[in-house]
Length: 519
Image (cartoon, rainbow, N blue to C red; front, top):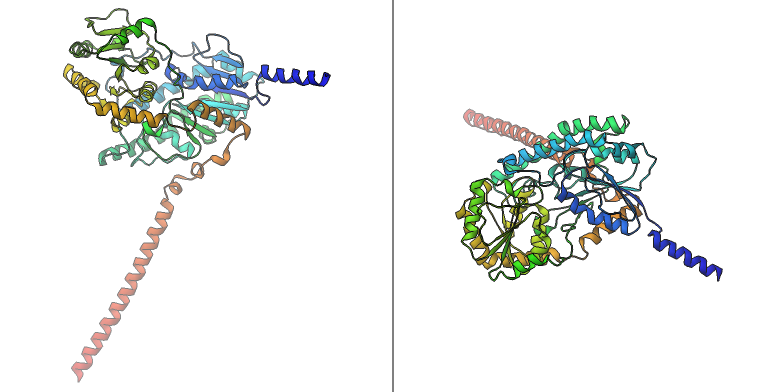
């Protein structure tokens, strides 16, 4: 009896404290964008729920205490990226502008975050971790944590893979059919697009390596010590890379085993809508169209002529519209428009009466639309948005509008097309069917691979040999050069033989003619 009581006590203790093989995990998210953190949070909470000791460095600490979850708050170190950008600030940005803006911003975050008290307290502590999880986005200066805690690490991205991230994974980045994330290209490019794509990949690789990361490394050494290996070396020791992508939506591309696509990781089951929203949608006999420019761009910063173009187009249609609008008032608001300062986007998109989604093309909202089978009208502004919208358009599930040429006429034409041309809805439903058809839910996949790395104390056996190959070997330039030299040698030998034969035959013919003349 005493033995049985003892075993029951141990079992109860294990149930209360989580799994016996729980691990210590440090997750580092130094980008202040809310939409980025929304992708990562479900995985972190699930790992904590499974009994792992999860320590999270981020700008978005939990509002209520969560078991096994410790926040290391970065709030106050740099401004939050939430309703932070205006259309005037963004201007007419191209892919190179995006790259410089995003990477430069990341570099400017290194010093204030690493010098902050919560981070310094962590660095001076005697804590140990079994695994680190990094957001892989715009700069490498935070990779020094992997050196400090001597633990394997997983990378996670709220987007697809940027061109410069593929090199650390040995992942094929063939610019003839793999588009750079920051350009509006698909996997089927024209000659000029392939040329620009190739130039951008090479430029961004060298700019990151020899400028941004060089500066970031000097800052990192200040806080992680001069004995820290080069950041590029630490970056190349990545065990796995989680990406917020799925081939159906983001277009097929080759990926090494260390890349794990988790498109839709943040998508949860829809919740009942607030009563006023449910009533508004239910009473819309001609359907509803949702309009949101995301959590970062301020819709109320639309220039007057652009805003009026939308309102005049909406007023000519029988459908109702719901728009994310940060102000409490709206100039010249049409009767068929409902504005909300913050809206339950996922839950609205899941409503059967929603006909379309007007969006800037951020990957979270776009994933939710694809998951729900809702066609989109995309107005990409910056970052990966042009690439995201291009992929959905290539799937026949959306229409792209250029922000610079927005008029009442272009908006109205796109709306009428998306509403009345059933091919868009049919293609959106087909895309949703493929997007949702997986052997595991994305969250379950993420948990499995995270614990896989923990079980095996890293996964070097999954690393492609291409990671450590010199660039000329990876591109087979040495082999091509060897064949070129061989061909030159063969050509010269054949030329030499041909000349010798020609000389020999000339001599024979000359001698024969000479003999004939003598006769």
